[in-house]
Length: 194
Image (cartoon, rainbow, N blue to C red; front, side, top):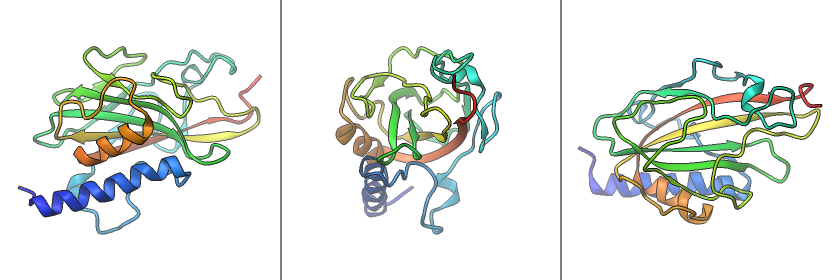
């Protein structure tokens, strides 16, 4: 069992890490501090792309040939005691700093998979950098290739924010309740644009 002081320190550190995305630091996912306990990190995979490799075209915006704007399928391992999961998808390569494309929480703690194009009942969706609730698919400018990070957070709360919450509210709320996390990164763009 984690002590209350340790949990408070982790929550504060997590809030700073998530807030970094708003300031352009783009820290959502892997730890910069090597002392982070491995037990707090879990594996995230996808049946359609490998970590650090290309996302298939159908997961991009319609500006790209074959782009359908679907969410990719994701799978993860669940730490014991997880009440729910949250997913944050961001683009650390966007001009002007990291852009958040998707913030969703309230995914049941027994779920360990997201199917392609999933519509999840009972979840809450926060605003993305574009101030819209929902998923904004990868859509880098023509000729640019960007990384898209799908960070999954195991939470000790069923849903830490309300539908339509701004990033300044949703990201710190996720950080405060994080008990574990994992990430997979896919590349998109380059010569694929019309």
